[in-house]
Length: 283
Length: 268
Image (cartoon, rainbow over the protein chains, first blue to last red):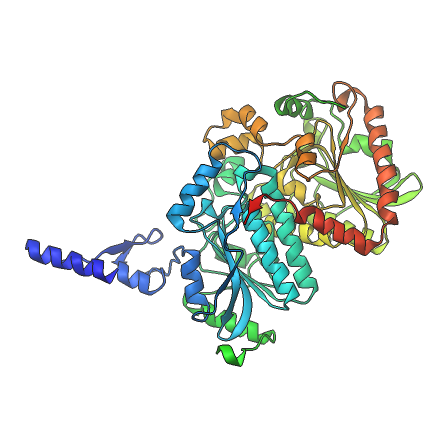
Protein backbone atom coordinates (compact mmCIF):
# COMPACT_ATOMS: atom_id res chain seq x y z
CA UNK A 1 0.00 0.00 0.00
CA UNK A 2 2.77 2.45 0.88
CA UNK A 3 4.54 1.58 -2.31
CA UNK A 4 1.38 2.44 -4.25
CA UNK A 5 1.11 5.71 -2.43
CA UNK A 6 4.74 6.49 -3.19
CA UNK A 7 4.18 5.77 -6.85
CA UNK A 8 1.15 8.03 -6.93
CA UNK A 9 3.13 10.83 -5.34
CA UNK A 10 6.06 10.30 -7.68
CA UNK A 11 3.82 10.23 -10.71
CA UNK A 12 2.02 13.41 -9.73
CA UNK A 13 5.38 15.10 -9.00
CA UNK A 14 6.74 14.11 -12.36
CA UNK A 15 3.59 15.22 -14.14
CA UNK A 16 4.13 18.62 -12.59
CA UNK A 17 0.71 18.73 -10.94
CA UNK A 18 0.40 21.57 -8.45
CA UNK A 19 -0.53 19.65 -5.37
CA UNK A 20 -0.68 16.05 -4.12
CA UNK A 21 -4.06 15.12 -2.61
CA UNK A 22 -3.96 12.09 -0.29
CA UNK A 23 -6.78 9.55 -0.70
CA UNK A 24 -9.73 10.50 1.47
CA UNK A 25 -12.37 8.54 3.35
CA UNK A 26 -15.92 9.82 3.19
CA UNK A 27 -17.93 8.58 6.16
CA UNK A 28 -21.27 7.09 5.14
CA UNK A 29 -22.73 8.10 8.50
CA UNK A 30 -21.57 11.68 9.20
CA UNK A 31 -20.64 12.46 5.57
CA UNK A 32 -17.40 14.05 6.83
CA UNK A 33 -14.11 13.43 5.05
CA UNK A 34 -10.79 12.53 6.58
CA UNK A 35 -7.55 11.02 5.25
CA UNK A 36 -8.02 7.37 4.35
CA UNK A 37 -4.72 6.57 6.09
CA UNK A 38 -6.11 7.89 9.38
CA UNK A 39 -9.32 5.83 8.98
CA UNK A 40 -7.24 2.69 8.28
CA UNK A 41 -4.92 3.45 11.20
CA UNK A 42 -7.97 3.44 13.50
CA UNK A 43 -8.95 0.03 12.05
CA UNK A 44 -11.74 1.54 9.98
CA UNK A 45 -13.25 3.85 12.53
CA UNK A 46 -14.25 7.33 11.34
CA UNK A 47 -12.00 9.84 13.20
CA UNK A 48 -14.82 12.39 13.14
CA UNK A 49 -17.92 10.53 14.37
CA UNK A 50 -16.68 7.15 15.54
CA UNK A 51 -18.53 5.21 12.84
CA UNK A 52 -17.27 1.63 12.87
CA UNK A 53 -16.75 0.38 9.32
CA UNK A 54 -16.91 -3.28 8.41
CA UNK A 55 -13.80 -5.44 8.72
CA UNK A 56 -12.91 -8.63 6.91
CA UNK A 57 -12.66 -11.72 9.11
CA UNK A 58 -8.88 -11.78 8.65
CA UNK A 59 -8.54 -8.13 9.71
CA UNK A 60 -10.76 -8.76 12.73
CA UNK A 61 -8.71 -11.73 13.84
CA UNK A 62 -5.50 -9.80 13.35
CA UNK A 63 -6.56 -6.91 15.62
CA UNK A 64 -8.16 -9.17 18.24
CA UNK A 65 -5.88 -12.11 18.99
CA UNK A 66 -2.24 -12.53 19.99
CA UNK A 67 0.23 -12.54 17.14
CA UNK A 68 0.62 -15.98 15.52
CA UNK A 69 -1.80 -17.57 17.99
CA UNK A 70 -4.66 -18.21 15.56
CA UNK A 71 -5.12 -21.78 14.45
CA UNK A 72 -7.95 -22.26 11.95
CA UNK A 73 -10.52 -25.07 12.18
CA UNK A 74 -12.38 -26.59 9.21
CA UNK A 75 -10.59 -24.33 6.76
CA UNK A 76 -11.47 -26.28 3.63
CA UNK A 77 -15.19 -26.81 4.17
CA UNK A 78 -17.27 -25.68 1.20
CA UNK A 79 -20.98 -25.64 0.68
CA UNK A 80 -23.13 -28.11 -1.23
CA UNK A 81 -26.22 -27.07 -3.15
CA UNK A 82 -29.19 -28.64 -1.33
CA UNK A 83 -31.89 -27.00 -3.47
CA UNK A 84 -29.96 -27.30 -6.76
CA UNK A 85 -30.48 -23.57 -6.86
CA UNK A 86 -29.75 -21.92 -10.21
CA UNK A 87 -26.25 -20.37 -10.34
CA UNK A 88 -25.59 -20.89 -6.62
CA UNK A 89 -22.38 -22.92 -7.12
CA UNK A 90 -21.12 -20.42 -9.71
CA UNK A 91 -21.81 -17.49 -7.45
CA UNK A 92 -19.92 -19.18 -4.63
CA UNK A 93 -16.96 -19.96 -6.85
CA UNK A 94 -16.78 -16.33 -7.89
CA UNK A 95 -16.94 -15.12 -4.30
CA UNK A 96 -14.25 -17.55 -3.22
CA UNK A 97 -11.96 -16.03 -5.80
CA UNK A 98 -12.80 -12.42 -4.94
CA UNK A 99 -12.71 -12.74 -1.14
CA UNK A 100 -10.28 -15.60 -0.61
CA UNK A 101 -12.84 -17.08 1.78
CA UNK A 102 -14.54 -20.48 1.52
CA UNK A 103 -17.74 -19.22 3.15
CA UNK A 104 -19.01 -16.50 5.48
CA UNK A 105 -17.29 -17.52 8.71
CA UNK A 106 -13.76 -18.31 9.88
CA UNK A 107 -13.41 -20.33 13.08
CA UNK A 108 -10.43 -21.45 15.09
CA UNK A 109 -8.56 -21.30 18.35
CA UNK A 110 -6.48 -18.37 19.48
CA UNK A 111 -5.14 -16.58 22.52
CA UNK A 112 -6.18 -13.12 23.69
CA UNK A 113 -3.48 -11.64 25.93
CA UNK A 114 -2.55 -15.20 26.72
CA UNK A 115 -6.03 -16.60 27.43
CA UNK A 116 -6.87 -19.43 25.09
CA UNK A 117 -10.28 -19.29 23.41
CA UNK A 118 -12.30 -20.59 20.50
CA UNK A 119 -13.12 -17.74 18.15
CA UNK A 120 -15.45 -17.34 15.20
CA UNK A 121 -15.61 -14.33 12.92
CA UNK A 122 -18.23 -13.78 10.26
CA UNK A 123 -17.42 -11.89 7.09
CA UNK A 124 -20.20 -9.88 5.47
CA UNK A 125 -18.39 -9.76 2.12
CA UNK A 126 -19.39 -13.38 1.52
CA UNK A 127 -23.09 -13.40 0.55
CA UNK A 128 -23.81 -10.82 3.25
CA UNK A 129 -22.60 -13.19 5.94
CA UNK A 130 -25.66 -15.35 5.41
CA UNK A 131 -25.92 -18.67 7.25
CA UNK A 132 -26.07 -21.80 5.13
CA UNK A 133 -24.74 -25.31 5.70
CA UNK A 134 -21.09 -24.27 6.06
CA UNK A 135 -21.65 -21.39 8.47
CA UNK A 136 -23.98 -23.61 10.52
CA UNK A 137 -21.63 -26.57 10.59
CA UNK A 138 -18.48 -24.57 11.36
CA UNK A 139 -20.12 -22.65 14.20
CA UNK A 140 -21.62 -25.85 15.60
CA UNK A 141 -18.24 -27.59 15.47
CA UNK A 142 -16.55 -24.59 17.08
CA UNK A 143 -18.91 -24.81 20.07
CA UNK A 144 -18.54 -28.59 20.24
CA UNK A 145 -14.75 -28.24 20.17
CA UNK A 146 -14.94 -25.66 22.97
CA UNK A 147 -17.20 -27.92 25.04
CA UNK A 148 -14.85 -30.88 24.67
CA UNK A 149 -11.78 -28.81 25.47
CA UNK A 150 -13.32 -26.65 28.22
CA UNK A 151 -12.70 -23.46 26.31
CA UNK A 152 -14.70 -20.24 26.08
CA UNK A 153 -16.13 -19.07 22.75
CA UNK A 154 -16.02 -15.57 21.29
CA UNK A 155 -18.22 -15.09 18.25
CA UNK A 156 -18.10 -11.94 16.11
CA UNK A 157 -21.42 -11.89 14.28
CA UNK A 158 -22.11 -10.14 10.96
CA UNK A 159 -24.95 -11.48 8.91
CA UNK A 160 -27.98 -10.62 6.84
CA UNK A 161 -29.62 -13.80 8.14
CA UNK A 162 -30.51 -17.06 6.44
CA UNK A 163 -28.88 -18.17 3.17
CA UNK A 164 -31.93 -18.05 0.88
CA UNK A 165 -30.29 -20.29 -1.72
CA UNK A 166 -30.25 -23.15 0.78
CA UNK A 167 -33.90 -22.77 1.78
CA UNK A 168 -35.11 -24.83 4.73
CA UNK A 169 -31.63 -26.31 5.20
CA UNK A 170 -30.48 -22.81 6.05
CA UNK A 171 -33.29 -22.39 8.59
CA UNK A 172 -32.27 -25.64 10.30
CA UNK A 173 -28.77 -24.23 10.90
CA UNK A 174 -30.40 -21.97 13.49
CA UNK A 175 -31.44 -25.06 15.46
CA UNK A 176 -28.10 -26.76 14.98
CA UNK A 177 -25.97 -23.82 16.14
CA UNK A 178 -28.29 -22.90 19.04
CA UNK A 179 -28.26 -26.51 20.21
CA UNK A 180 -24.47 -26.52 20.29
CA UNK A 181 -24.46 -23.20 22.19
CA UNK A 182 -26.87 -24.68 24.73
CA UNK A 183 -24.71 -27.77 25.35
CA UNK A 184 -21.63 -25.56 25.73
CA UNK A 185 -23.52 -23.39 28.20
CA UNK A 186 -24.84 -26.38 30.17
CA UNK A 187 -21.25 -27.60 30.46
CA UNK A 188 -20.34 -24.27 32.11
CA UNK A 189 -18.55 -22.68 29.17
CA UNK A 190 -18.42 -18.91 28.70
CA UNK A 191 -19.78 -17.54 25.43
CA UNK A 192 -19.26 -13.91 24.47
CA UNK A 193 -21.16 -12.71 21.40
CA UNK A 194 -19.82 -9.58 19.75
CA UNK A 195 -22.39 -8.11 17.39
CA UNK A 196 -20.88 -6.21 14.50
CA UNK A 197 -22.42 -4.59 11.45
CA UNK A 198 -24.95 -6.01 10.52
CA UNK A 199 -26.39 -8.68 12.83
CA UNK A 200 -29.89 -9.51 11.64
CA UNK A 201 -32.45 -12.20 10.78
CA UNK A 202 -31.75 -15.84 11.50
CA UNK A 203 -28.40 -15.14 13.14
CA UNK A 204 -30.00 -12.70 15.58
CA UNK A 205 -32.72 -15.31 16.15
CA UNK A 206 -30.17 -17.98 16.99
CA UNK A 207 -26.61 -18.09 18.30
CA UNK A 208 -25.94 -14.32 18.25
CA UNK A 209 -28.60 -13.67 20.92
CA UNK A 210 -27.50 -16.52 23.16
CA UNK A 211 -24.24 -15.12 24.54
CA UNK A 212 -23.73 -15.08 28.30
CA UNK A 213 -22.37 -11.65 27.53
CA UNK A 214 -23.46 -9.70 24.47
CA UNK A 215 -21.24 -6.87 23.30
CA UNK A 216 -21.95 -4.62 20.33
CA UNK A 217 -19.80 -2.21 18.39
CA UNK A 218 -21.18 1.35 18.41
CA UNK A 219 -23.97 2.24 15.99
CA UNK A 220 -24.07 -1.15 14.26
CA UNK A 221 -27.33 -2.54 12.90
CA UNK A 222 -28.90 -5.23 15.10
CA UNK A 223 -32.37 -6.63 14.57
CA UNK A 224 -34.60 -9.50 13.60
CA UNK A 225 -36.73 -8.13 10.77
CA UNK A 226 -35.37 -5.92 8.02
CA UNK A 227 -36.10 -2.23 8.19
CA UNK A 228 -37.90 -2.18 4.84
CA UNK A 229 -40.07 -5.15 5.81
CA UNK A 230 -41.21 -3.35 8.95
CA UNK A 231 -41.74 -0.07 7.11
CA UNK A 232 -43.94 -1.80 4.56
CA UNK A 233 -45.90 -3.54 7.34
CA UNK A 234 -46.57 -0.40 9.37
CA UNK A 235 -46.62 1.93 6.35
CA UNK A 236 -44.47 4.62 7.90
CA UNK A 237 -40.83 5.63 8.07
CA UNK A 238 -38.82 4.37 11.01
CA UNK A 239 -36.60 6.68 13.07
CA UNK A 240 -32.92 6.83 12.10
CA UNK A 241 -31.70 5.16 15.30
CA UNK A 242 -34.11 2.21 15.04
CA UNK A 243 -32.27 -1.14 15.41
CA UNK A 244 -28.90 0.43 16.10
CA UNK A 245 -26.76 -1.10 18.85
CA UNK A 246 -27.77 1.73 21.17
CA UNK A 247 -31.47 0.93 20.60
CA UNK A 248 -30.90 -2.73 21.48
CA UNK A 249 -28.83 -1.69 24.51
CA UNK A 250 -31.63 0.62 25.64
CA UNK A 251 -34.15 -2.22 25.35
CA UNK A 252 -32.01 -4.65 27.28
CA UNK A 253 -30.69 -6.98 24.61
CA UNK A 254 -27.05 -5.88 24.60
CA UNK A 255 -24.88 -5.79 27.72
CA UNK A 256 -22.33 -3.24 26.57
CA UNK A 257 -21.29 -1.14 23.64
CA UNK A 258 -17.56 -1.25 23.19
CA UNK A 259 -15.32 0.76 20.87
CA UNK A 260 -13.17 -1.25 18.54
CA UNK A 261 -9.99 0.10 20.10
CA UNK A 262 -11.03 -1.28 23.49
CA UNK A 263 -12.42 -4.60 22.25
CA UNK A 264 -9.28 -6.71 22.69
CA UNK A 265 -8.61 -5.56 26.25
CA UNK A 266 -12.31 -5.88 27.18
CA UNK A 267 -12.41 -9.45 25.90
CA UNK A 268 -9.18 -10.25 27.70
CA UNK A 269 -10.55 -8.90 31.00
CA UNK A 270 -13.82 -10.79 30.64
CA UNK A 271 -12.00 -14.06 29.91
CA UNK A 272 -9.79 -13.60 32.95
CA UNK A 273 -12.78 -12.68 35.15
CA UNK A 274 -14.20 -16.08 34.25
CA UNK A 275 -11.01 -17.85 35.23
CA UNK A 276 -9.60 -18.39 31.75
CA UNK A 277 -6.12 -17.35 32.77
CA UNK A 278 -3.19 -16.57 30.54
CA UNK A 279 -1.09 -19.59 29.75
CA UNK A 280 2.50 -18.57 30.56
CA UNK A 281 4.02 -20.05 27.48
CA UNK A 282 1.74 -18.08 25.21
CA UNK A 283 2.15 -14.63 26.75
CA UNK B 1 -50.21 -42.06 -0.28
CA UNK B 2 -49.23 -40.15 -3.33
CA UNK B 3 -49.67 -36.43 -3.64
CA UNK B 4 -49.25 -35.16 -7.17
CA UNK B 5 -50.11 -31.59 -6.35
CA UNK B 6 -47.45 -29.00 -7.00
CA UNK B 7 -46.09 -26.86 -4.18
CA UNK B 8 -48.09 -23.95 -5.55
CA UNK B 9 -51.36 -25.90 -5.61
CA UNK B 10 -50.80 -26.97 -2.03
CA UNK B 11 -50.12 -23.39 -0.96
CA UNK B 12 -53.54 -22.48 -2.35
CA UNK B 13 -55.04 -25.32 -0.28
CA UNK B 14 -53.28 -24.12 2.86
CA UNK B 15 -54.91 -20.73 2.36
CA UNK B 16 -58.35 -22.14 1.58
CA UNK B 17 -61.08 -20.67 3.73
CA UNK B 18 -62.32 -23.33 6.07
CA UNK B 19 -59.02 -25.13 6.51
CA UNK B 20 -59.12 -26.34 10.10
CA UNK B 21 -57.22 -24.20 12.58
CA UNK B 22 -55.91 -25.49 15.86
CA UNK B 23 -59.04 -24.13 17.57
CA UNK B 24 -61.09 -26.56 15.46
CA UNK B 25 -58.73 -29.45 16.06
CA UNK B 26 -58.13 -29.28 19.83
CA UNK B 27 -61.70 -30.24 20.89
CA UNK B 28 -61.65 -33.12 18.39
CA UNK B 29 -58.29 -34.54 19.44
CA UNK B 30 -58.04 -33.77 23.17
CA UNK B 31 -60.26 -33.70 26.23
CA UNK B 32 -60.14 -31.46 29.31
CA UNK B 33 -58.32 -28.62 27.56
CA UNK B 34 -57.51 -25.78 29.93
CA UNK B 35 -56.02 -22.76 28.24
CA UNK B 36 -53.27 -20.87 30.08
CA UNK B 37 -52.40 -17.26 29.43
CA UNK B 38 -49.46 -14.90 29.44
CA UNK B 39 -45.68 -14.90 29.60
CA UNK B 40 -45.61 -13.53 33.19
CA UNK B 41 -43.53 -10.61 31.96
CA UNK B 42 -45.33 -8.50 29.38
CA UNK B 43 -48.70 -9.83 28.27
CA UNK B 44 -50.74 -12.51 26.59
CA UNK B 45 -50.10 -12.98 22.88
CA UNK B 46 -53.23 -14.21 21.11
CA UNK B 47 -51.22 -15.58 18.16
CA UNK B 48 -50.01 -18.47 20.32
CA UNK B 49 -52.29 -20.43 22.62
CA UNK B 50 -51.25 -23.01 25.12
CA UNK B 51 -52.52 -25.13 27.91
CA UNK B 52 -52.96 -28.59 29.34
CA UNK B 53 -55.25 -31.36 28.16
CA UNK B 54 -55.59 -35.12 27.89
CA UNK B 55 -54.70 -37.20 24.88
CA UNK B 56 -56.62 -40.38 25.59
CA UNK B 57 -55.72 -40.79 29.25
CA UNK B 58 -52.39 -38.99 29.12
CA UNK B 59 -51.96 -35.42 30.36
CA UNK B 60 -50.09 -33.34 27.77
CA UNK B 61 -49.06 -29.72 27.27
CA UNK B 62 -50.19 -28.06 24.06
CA UNK B 63 -48.62 -25.00 22.48
CA UNK B 64 -49.99 -23.77 19.18
CA UNK B 65 -49.94 -20.97 16.67
CA UNK B 66 -53.49 -19.93 15.92
CA UNK B 67 -54.94 -18.75 12.66
CA UNK B 68 -58.30 -17.02 12.62
CA UNK B 69 -61.31 -18.51 10.89
CA UNK B 70 -62.63 -15.12 9.82
CA UNK B 71 -61.39 -11.56 9.69
CA UNK B 72 -62.33 -10.74 13.29
CA UNK B 73 -60.53 -13.79 14.64
CA UNK B 74 -57.58 -13.02 12.41
CA UNK B 75 -57.35 -9.49 13.70
CA UNK B 76 -57.50 -10.76 17.27
CA UNK B 77 -54.71 -13.31 16.72
CA UNK B 78 -52.66 -11.00 14.49
CA UNK B 79 -52.94 -13.45 11.55
CA UNK B 80 -50.98 -16.01 13.58
CA UNK B 81 -47.86 -13.85 13.63
CA UNK B 82 -46.56 -14.01 17.21
CA UNK B 83 -44.79 -11.31 19.18
CA UNK B 84 -41.93 -12.16 21.55
CA UNK B 85 -44.31 -12.60 24.49
CA UNK B 86 -46.03 -15.38 22.53
CA UNK B 87 -42.79 -17.34 22.27
CA UNK B 88 -42.05 -16.61 25.93
CA UNK B 89 -45.47 -17.94 26.92
CA UNK B 90 -44.71 -21.06 24.88
CA UNK B 91 -41.40 -21.45 26.71
CA UNK B 92 -43.05 -20.99 30.10
CA UNK B 93 -45.53 -23.74 29.32
CA UNK B 94 -42.80 -25.96 27.87
CA UNK B 95 -40.83 -25.62 31.10
CA UNK B 96 -43.96 -26.59 33.00
CA UNK B 97 -44.37 -29.64 30.80
CA UNK B 98 -40.80 -30.59 31.72
CA UNK B 99 -41.46 -30.02 35.43
CA UNK B 100 -44.60 -32.15 35.50
CA UNK B 101 -43.24 -34.71 33.04
CA UNK B 102 -45.91 -34.09 30.46
CA UNK B 103 -45.12 -34.59 26.79
CA UNK B 104 -45.19 -31.35 24.79
CA UNK B 105 -47.21 -31.12 21.58
CA UNK B 106 -46.62 -28.09 19.34
CA UNK B 107 -48.86 -27.10 16.45
CA UNK B 108 -47.16 -24.84 13.91
CA UNK B 109 -49.24 -22.62 11.66
CA UNK B 110 -47.77 -19.19 11.01
CA UNK B 111 -46.68 -17.00 8.10
CA UNK B 112 -43.78 -16.01 10.38
CA UNK B 113 -42.89 -14.11 13.53
CA UNK B 114 -44.39 -10.62 13.44
CA UNK B 115 -42.18 -7.94 11.91
CA UNK B 116 -42.87 -4.68 13.70
CA UNK B 117 -41.47 -2.02 15.98
CA UNK B 118 -42.85 -3.47 19.23
CA UNK B 119 -41.61 -6.93 18.30
CA UNK B 120 -38.10 -5.56 17.79
CA UNK B 121 -38.22 -3.55 21.02
CA UNK B 122 -39.15 -6.63 22.98
CA UNK B 123 -36.50 -8.80 21.34
CA UNK B 124 -38.10 -10.98 18.68
CA UNK B 125 -34.70 -12.42 17.79
CA UNK B 126 -33.83 -13.24 21.38
CA UNK B 127 -37.23 -14.83 22.06
CA UNK B 128 -36.93 -17.18 19.09
CA UNK B 129 -33.29 -18.01 19.84
CA UNK B 130 -34.11 -18.77 23.47
CA UNK B 131 -36.92 -21.17 22.53
CA UNK B 132 -34.76 -23.00 20.02
CA UNK B 133 -31.95 -23.46 22.52
CA UNK B 134 -34.20 -24.40 25.45
CA UNK B 135 -36.35 -26.83 23.46
CA UNK B 136 -33.18 -28.63 22.40
CA UNK B 137 -32.54 -29.79 25.96
CA UNK B 138 -36.08 -29.83 27.35
CA UNK B 139 -36.32 -33.03 29.37
CA UNK B 140 -39.66 -34.24 28.09
CA UNK B 141 -40.73 -35.61 24.69
CA UNK B 142 -41.67 -32.96 22.09
CA UNK B 143 -43.76 -33.65 18.98
CA UNK B 144 -44.39 -30.80 16.53
CA UNK B 145 -46.94 -30.81 13.73
CA UNK B 146 -47.08 -28.29 10.89
CA UNK B 147 -50.77 -27.75 10.16
CA UNK B 148 -50.53 -25.29 7.30
CA UNK B 149 -47.80 -22.68 7.07
CA UNK B 150 -44.43 -23.24 8.68
CA UNK B 151 -43.05 -19.74 8.27
CA UNK B 152 -39.34 -19.47 9.02
CA UNK B 153 -37.96 -18.66 12.48
CA UNK B 154 -41.49 -18.05 13.69
CA UNK B 155 -42.19 -21.74 13.07
CA UNK B 156 -38.83 -23.04 14.24
CA UNK B 157 -39.43 -21.42 17.64
CA UNK B 158 -41.97 -24.25 18.17
CA UNK B 159 -40.20 -26.67 15.86
CA UNK B 160 -37.27 -28.08 17.82
CA UNK B 161 -38.66 -31.52 18.63
CA UNK B 162 -38.10 -35.26 18.71
CA UNK B 163 -40.25 -35.75 15.70
CA UNK B 164 -41.81 -33.35 13.21
CA UNK B 165 -44.95 -34.28 11.28
CA UNK B 166 -46.36 -32.37 8.35
CA UNK B 167 -49.98 -32.43 7.25
CA UNK B 168 -49.92 -33.62 3.66
CA UNK B 169 -50.43 -30.19 2.11
CA UNK B 170 -48.59 -28.13 4.71
CA UNK B 171 -45.42 -26.24 3.85
CA UNK B 172 -42.30 -25.31 5.79
CA UNK B 173 -39.96 -22.67 4.46
CA UNK B 174 -37.20 -20.23 5.26
CA UNK B 175 -39.30 -17.38 3.88
CA UNK B 176 -42.61 -17.05 2.04
CA UNK B 177 -42.20 -17.73 -1.69
CA UNK B 178 -43.28 -14.15 -2.27
CA UNK B 179 -40.58 -12.78 0.01
CA UNK B 180 -38.08 -15.18 -1.49
CA UNK B 181 -38.82 -14.00 -5.05
CA UNK B 182 -38.70 -10.41 -3.92
CA UNK B 183 -35.31 -10.78 -2.23
CA UNK B 184 -33.54 -12.97 -4.75
CA UNK B 185 -35.09 -11.82 -8.01
CA UNK B 186 -36.40 -8.41 -6.92
CA UNK B 187 -39.74 -9.52 -8.32
CA UNK B 188 -42.44 -10.68 -5.91
CA UNK B 189 -44.71 -11.70 -8.78
CA UNK B 190 -42.47 -14.71 -9.42
CA UNK B 191 -43.74 -16.35 -6.21
CA UNK B 192 -45.13 -19.41 -7.97
CA UNK B 193 -41.75 -20.12 -9.56
CA UNK B 194 -40.12 -19.59 -6.16
CA UNK B 195 -42.51 -22.02 -4.46
CA UNK B 196 -41.48 -24.80 -6.85
CA UNK B 197 -37.76 -24.21 -6.46
CA UNK B 198 -37.64 -23.73 -2.69
CA UNK B 199 -38.46 -27.31 -1.61
CA UNK B 200 -41.23 -26.56 0.86
CA UNK B 201 -43.57 -29.56 0.65
CA UNK B 202 -44.09 -32.33 3.18
CA UNK B 203 -42.23 -34.78 0.92
CA UNK B 204 -39.31 -32.33 0.61
CA UNK B 205 -39.13 -32.06 4.41
CA UNK B 206 -38.93 -35.83 4.78
CA UNK B 207 -36.30 -36.07 2.03
CA UNK B 208 -34.19 -33.35 3.70
CA UNK B 209 -34.44 -34.93 7.16
CA UNK B 210 -36.46 -32.03 8.56
CA UNK B 211 -39.68 -34.05 9.07
CA UNK B 212 -40.25 -37.73 9.85
CA UNK B 213 -43.92 -38.23 9.10
CA UNK B 214 -46.60 -37.03 6.70
CA UNK B 215 -50.16 -37.05 8.05
CA UNK B 216 -52.64 -37.83 5.31
CA UNK B 217 -55.36 -35.29 4.58
CA UNK B 218 -58.89 -36.14 3.44
CA UNK B 219 -59.47 -36.13 -0.30
CA UNK B 220 -59.21 -32.59 -1.63
CA UNK B 221 -57.67 -31.22 1.56
CA UNK B 222 -58.17 -30.98 5.32
CA UNK B 223 -61.06 -28.50 4.99
CA UNK B 224 -63.26 -31.21 3.44
CA UNK B 225 -63.49 -33.39 6.53
CA UNK B 226 -62.65 -32.09 10.00
CA UNK B 227 -63.47 -35.41 11.66
CA UNK B 228 -61.15 -37.33 9.38
CA UNK B 229 -58.16 -35.00 9.70
CA UNK B 230 -58.61 -34.85 13.48
CA UNK B 231 -58.74 -38.63 13.61
CA UNK B 232 -55.55 -38.91 11.55
CA UNK B 233 -53.70 -36.46 13.81
CA UNK B 234 -54.99 -38.18 16.94
CA UNK B 235 -53.97 -41.58 15.66
CA UNK B 236 -50.47 -40.29 14.91
CA UNK B 237 -50.08 -38.67 18.34
CA UNK B 238 -51.53 -41.69 20.16
CA UNK B 239 -48.88 -43.85 18.58
CA UNK B 240 -45.92 -41.44 18.88
CA UNK B 241 -46.39 -40.06 22.37
CA UNK B 242 -46.18 -43.42 24.21
CA UNK B 243 -43.29 -44.43 21.96
CA UNK B 244 -41.28 -41.32 22.88
CA UNK B 245 -42.30 -41.48 26.55
CA UNK B 246 -40.90 -44.99 26.84
CA UNK B 247 -37.45 -43.87 25.78
CA UNK B 248 -34.75 -42.99 28.27
CA UNK B 249 -34.78 -39.17 28.33
CA UNK B 250 -31.01 -38.87 27.83
CA UNK B 251 -31.20 -41.09 24.76
CA UNK B 252 -34.11 -39.01 23.49
CA UNK B 253 -32.14 -35.77 23.94
CA UNK B 254 -29.14 -37.19 22.11
CA UNK B 255 -31.38 -38.22 19.23
CA UNK B 256 -33.06 -34.81 19.20
CA UNK B 257 -29.70 -33.06 18.96
CA UNK B 258 -28.51 -35.46 16.26
CA UNK B 259 -31.68 -34.96 14.20
CA UNK B 260 -30.78 -31.29 13.68
CA UNK B 261 -27.02 -31.80 13.90
CA UNK B 262 -26.89 -33.78 10.68
CA UNK B 263 -28.82 -31.34 8.47
CA UNK B 264 -26.59 -29.50 6.02
CA UNK B 265 -24.75 -30.13 2.77
CA UNK B 266 -21.04 -29.51 2.52
CA UNK B 267 -17.75 -31.07 1.51
CA UNK B 268 -14.29 -30.77 3.04
